[in-house]
Image 1 (spheres, helix red, strand yellow):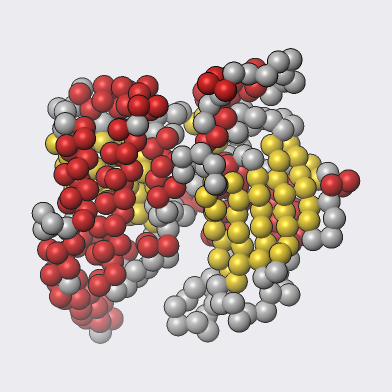
Image 2 (cartoon, rainbow, N blue to C red; image 1 turned 90 degrees about the horizontal axis):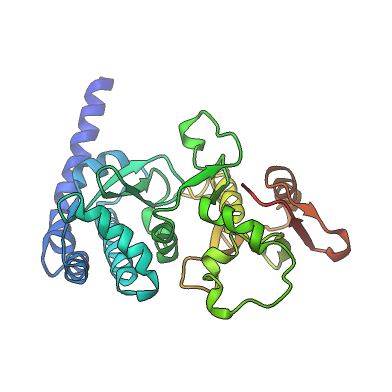
Length: 338
């Protein structure tokens, strides 16, 4: 009976996706679909063919329990690809990214002058774009997590593209569990590690404006790193100058936020969200905001000491007592991540 029930469930799921085939035709396969228009525009910008491998039935099989409505699942996937194509085209058109563009086109030229992309489910905390250098193809990792439309702000994609060719060095031991691999390390780009010695010492003269990197890169290498934790009305704010520190804090508390079982949506009691900076070109995230998912919920029970402990023990920052006050704590780390 159990096997029969499982088979019936799979058939029902397939029927639901098949019922949304019109959505697939309109939102994905049609040349007039926004995603296809964005792909065509990218192809025109770069002068190469763009091949996107997307199997909705396989994605649906792995992800439908997290995004159970095919009426929203299909447009969510299409929107991710559309945003990817738009951001990549914008980056390639920006003359300030000439060095990045040269490296990218060099890789593509070695593998048939075709830009390839495929999507696959992964155990990760957010949608993430990576570059497989050996095969010269993009992979968009789709998280086995909450509905996709909440997990892919364009600023995240811009950041992924910015650091596409930057090797990473781990500064802490990663956990052996696969689903924790994206939480267990803080990364520093190698190129910024080399800048630390020059940029972190007390300057004897002001640098020329043209010599300074964009905020997305500059503040990765600047020590000391700073974090300010504030309790505000119905929220907690964590502001910081070092984005990888904020990313790890965000991913950890988002991963372990308790689910409200009394809510039919099965959402966490708290929303933990990285906030885009007002500076830079969209890739810099300079704060984390923690708010109740339901604003009618009681806020009195939130415990700020968990965040304080994480900042001091996991991230290795030191509290600055003279700058802290009621409802606000300031932290500093003088030693750069290697």
